[in-house]
Amino acid sequence: MDARTPNNIPFRQLPAFPVLSMQTVVAVLAALILWVFQGHVAGYSGLLGGLVALLPNAYFAYRVYRYSGARSARAIVREFYSGEAGKIILTAALFVLVWVGVDPLEPTAVFAGYLAVLAVGACALLIVRRFQKH
Image (tube, rainbow, N blue to C red; front, side, top):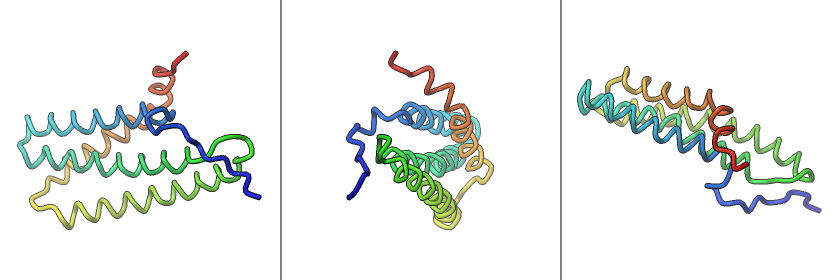
């Protein structure tokens, strides 16, 4: 008997959606700022760095919120660990793709975009609390 209860909530209604939305906005803003002040190479490099952080976070959120309910507790914990492992592997793979596949590239801008998006994730509790529906 399978005790896992699939979560049928649309992705946009998940608790992680406001954080992912804010990370998307920050990635685009960082790219625009870098483009204005450093040029187009820094702009797309910053955007790629932001995407390197954003895409694995979206994958992790998808994996963690696949199941819901008390009967799915074990499945949720399993998804948490596999989602985190997948997030780390996906981040490494995306960094390799960016370094190998993009030329010219501004490494400082890549890390600036990456760190800007990670900073939003570090403030996730503040963002989710602000966007609650109560």
